[in-house]
Length: 171
View: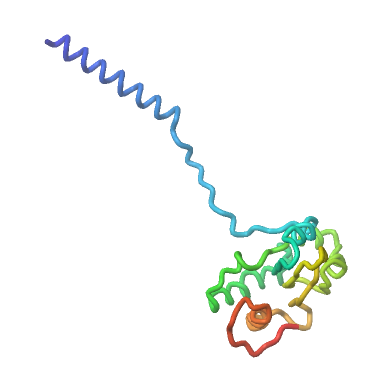
């Protein structure tokens, strides 16, 4: 009788060990991917991206440099304030364009040539008509006037993205 109990115990031990080894071999990985909220468009491929939307497509762009204090202020303070006030999710409405490489290489004049922007950070509403990109309106941060939450709300209202009551008008 003792032999049968020992044999049964040994079989259960082997079965348990095999199950543990098999589980460890095929164990699910513990890596998680958390969605990247800060998805940026590359400036070098921006024109092609905008045109790929086809005629009558509208894009709302935020030209942002990670090395610029004004850009960080607008992204972290102005946009956040307006998001809280309006309950809009700007990551779904406004596309952020990374211009950090332009700033590093002192090529910010391309913004004027390509997008009619004289300064940054800036917001621009652009459409595509007959394969050409048209800048409908823009809101720029200048040394004379920093973009405020009221300016941004007025720009959103101008573009039909928000139906609020704002008394300011964008520049």
